[in-house]
Each structure stands twice: as structure tokens, then as C-alpha cells.
Image (cartoon, rainbow, N blue to C red; front, side):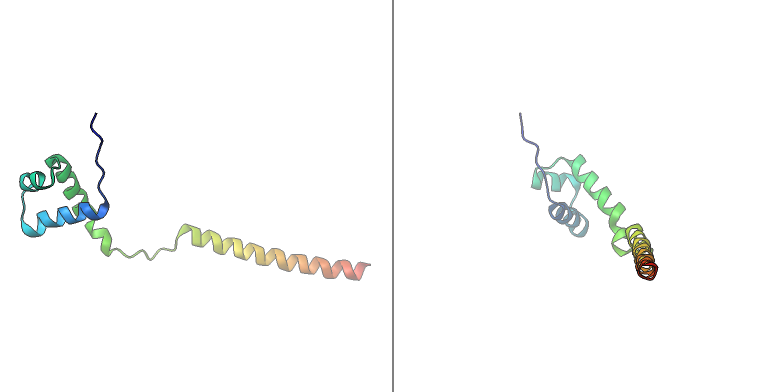
Length: 93
């Protein structure tokens, strides 16, 4: 049984860029790196589909940031209520 090879994202990027920038064919690159042309085709497709995401800017606040802000407000409110309750209980004694 043959062990399945794994490739780093950096390696995949390098191979796809070689094909694109140097005009290498799938067949040529397949022979050079001993990688099936169907695999290389998939890498190239994924690379091109995701390329535009490199320039996207996410201006929306992260859901976690919103939740953290909500919890911080809650803690502040509860802290104030606790302080008020302590003061009231001192005056009732």
C-alpha cells in the first residue's frame, strides 16, 4: 500500500504560480513534480477561486467582539448593582 503524500499550502502555491507565471502546462508540471494532473488542476482552480479573498477587507465587527462588548456591559451593570446593594445594606444595619 502506497502512503498518501501531503503538500504544504506554500508548496501548492509555488507550483500553481509556476504554472501561471511561467506558462507551464499541467502535463509538464505533473511530470516535473510527479503529481497527477487532476490534482494540479484542482489546486489551480482553488487558487484562482480564492485569490480575490486576499484583497477583501472585513469591516464588520466579529461576532465574538460584539459578544465580548455585551458581556463587558453586563459586568459593569452588575458591579454597579452590587455596590449599590452593599451601600444599602450598610445603612439598614
